[in-house]
Image 1 (tube, rainbow, N blue to C red):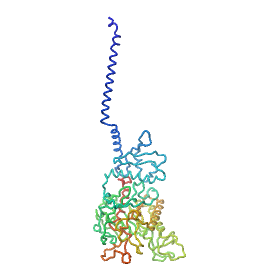
Image 2: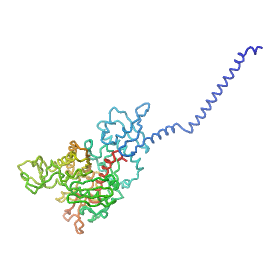
Image 3: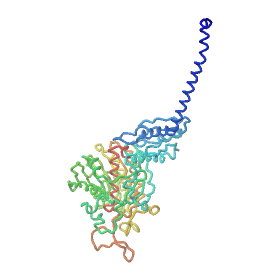
Image 4: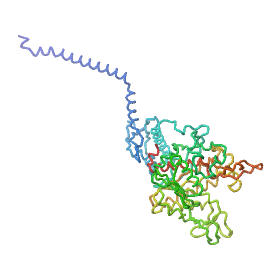
Length: 558
């Protein structure tokens, strides 16, 4: 009865055992969880979890360029100074600006207030340092950033080292020294090799390439005899194998099929002196190996047509690139060349709209006899100045600088020209012990100069300086939609005294090639370039410039 009348008591008696069992079950479950969790941690350490995270990041840092002017894919940039290690997401266009055309990279990434950031390692294990840069260091440092990005892309696209460039004999790899600094680029008128182009093409070294040249004097029938060094009996051939390697990237070997495809339906004109002819023949020899062109030339200009792609290669003679007359003018008699330094050579200017790409060459004729006319007044002369009572206002070096500004300005303001203009910088000669007409010589030179061996040529340096100044002055006047590029080969080719014909100017088997008993050298050519030889590098650079312009700056880094 008591029990029956007291159910509450029974309930209180059984409640304690049930609570105890619940606690025991919970503790057992927790123990089991900790046990299995421990097993999981032992088999999969925390480090592997982080490793998986960074592997995912590596895959995300894909810097390839699908096509055209597309920029980089998205990149995570970690703030090293942040205590939380938070990740900053950069848009595609942000990193893309490192190599995008006509953008000042320093404006985007160089600021005293910027925190130190570093792009995490890419799939190749290398990283890009983007630490804060002082104002004084900005331009040089950002150049390294852009080049590092370019190297990562290049490695990603082309695979691991082992390209043709690495066949070089390291004992022959000579550093060619720093190139002269040039002003910052502007819209369509700038020098190739600036930071925004991704790679300085003109700062690097010469290396020995065992693959050798892409043609021989026997496989190209249009080489001018004076430049046919092997055909003229030159005994050494090593000068044919040296190739140019920019410090920050590769300069690809000339690809004739690539060139013809890029230039499909277009015309390239070499305009200038005999060195322009030298380069034009090099271009034809390189292209000849994949297709024999049709000669469509006339007395006014040489023209070679590659029918498969309707590409035309043109050469027009213009020794000074400015207007030349022979008639008497003021106190200058007839028969002496008179240069109107402020008037472009109309012989090719009227043809300008027909051309898609032009390569200009000049400078060496300013060593020849001539009269300089500016603003319809005789202001100077070279190897000519009969009236000593008159003051000479312009010498041949100044005249060259004025002529460059004149011709580039005329091209940049031509209302019907929208093409690409490449001004090849002054080609150095290597006459030692005298000038071309006073016993100068390059006899016996068989390899490039090494570091510390280069002897500065004062005339070459001042001619180059005047040329660059004239170019930069002209681009400020540009009004049309054409593009101007300075192909600055001067210092790099200062090391190639071995690349000239020297005494091997003709096939005469009895020609004198050694110095006489009195030490006097034989007549020789230390101005033009053997073919094949260093001059072929100029057309590798031309192709790279065209590729950057036609395919887009970013894709040229691949």
